[in-house]
Image (cartoon, rainbow, N blue to C red):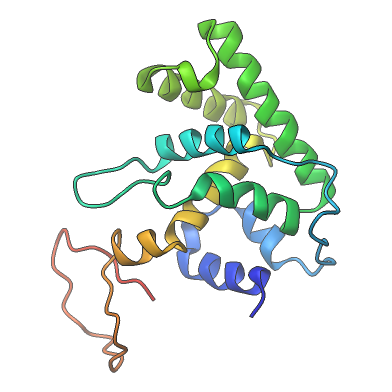
Length: 186
């Protein structure tokens, strides 16, 4: 199974947690983009910034590690470069650069130097801009969706954030579900 097929299956299982844009990219039947053909590349420091972005979306809790521990910061650029069409790659890269610029103008700091509260405020601004412009897709929506997709398809997301049985058993569609219990990983 190739990466695109695996992502389709995870996205299908996650259903409403991912926007129509991301679902469309994963299910649309356009040509698979060859790795290395993207006009954009992401450095280790840019991956660290995306990891911090993802950690605000899915932070570490007392019950499971967050997006940063799951390696989401490195997975997002890989999926953008290998699976997204050039137009969405450009939207993502321009939005990423706009987020960094907004960090400097609003807080007079680099993104990684922002406090958690400042990062949350910046994220809320990006989210509101995406809502106000009513223009899909946007950097925020793509990055948020990929954070969720990458996290819940990682080992940490499947084994620690959700219930996990390492040995397959029979399917029981009426298995009891207790309030507060984690969702089952498939």
